[in-house]
Length: 159
Image 1 (spheres, rainbow, N blue to C red):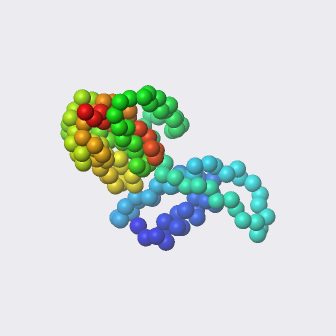
Image 2: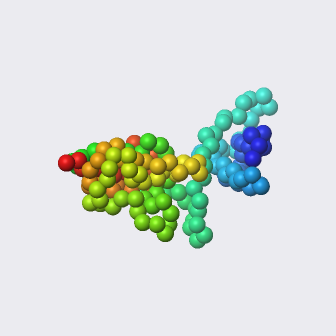
Image 3: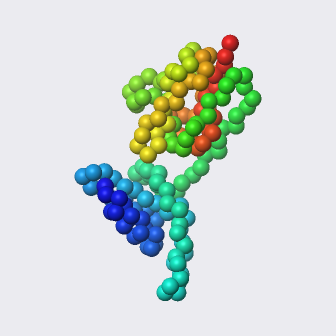
């Protein structure tokens, strides 16, 4: 999609009461959402409008209310070994595809540089590799969970 078209969509979203805007064409799909809705108020003609932050909206399955719920992060207790944390914001995947076997499981032996999971960010699959060799001690997140920077993913217990 052309950058000018995306800029126009952002402009439309910013100056309307629309919360989510999605547009598809032959080159792809763009979905924009306001993170905080602005109250509709009368503004002076030359007064600048506040610019809300934009974010990618989560997909809502049929039958859901559309309310975004945040799950409490699993508490990370002190564990032996190295905690591998997410280097980016995205969606955690334990398997390369829905039908495939998980990259690692608790108790599995991993080598340094071995892929232990994938974080999807902006439709890019980013492989997360083991920083050290050892055994997977704990997995903190599940496939499909949203992760932030420094969210603990797994622990690797070294010998």
